[in-house]
Length: 274
Image 1 (tube, rainbow, N blue to C red):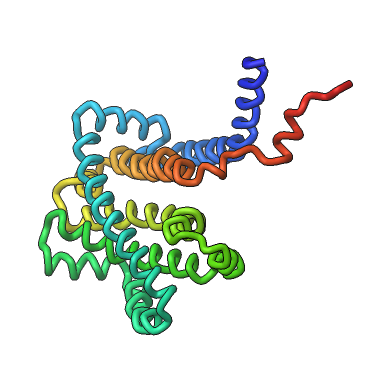
Image 2 (image 1 turned 120 degrees about the horizontal axis):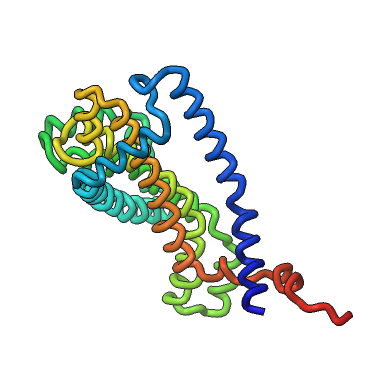
């Protein structure tokens, strides 16, 4: 029975990921054809890029760069999430505050990251201050708008029923407000984290001597195209790891009801009487 259940789970997992695997395979094939047509100087092949990643890892550059960039992203994105959720909740409850802060959020959205980097360079110089500041101001609007939309779409009849039964405030917070906020906010967190990685690399490339962006800039100066591609692939893999190994497990931990079997699933596993 355990072997059968494991086989069913493996088959279900394969069915869920095979479209991604097919898409990745097609991309790698097109990448290889492009490398064969243009040559290594313009576009290194996947194998050449993988070899460059191996060289970067053995020299210790990879670990140091990931730690530096990861610190910038963690510090800035945590600050953006905390501020965005707080401001979004207040704006969702107080319409006057929402009207007052809306022009500021629109301005933050409209200013391109490169402009923030230039401004941060004048304020903080080269160092960690520039990427942390830039990531914070560029991802804050995404979290704020996600939180605001969550507060706006909260089911009013459910809240009225809870008040009718005199539900304690702590249960309202843990069983109503928080689950609804988290379910609506998660897509914004995924989008914000991806943006945080892109902005971090851009800010480090222009303002720092450490981090993935700085290593990418150094490879560009040295005309090491395979190393440039290697750092790009490292960024992509880091974004995938951040989403699928950090955010998604965290969501399952905070929303355990999403992993509960549905009635349909139960019916599918019900043994037949015949």
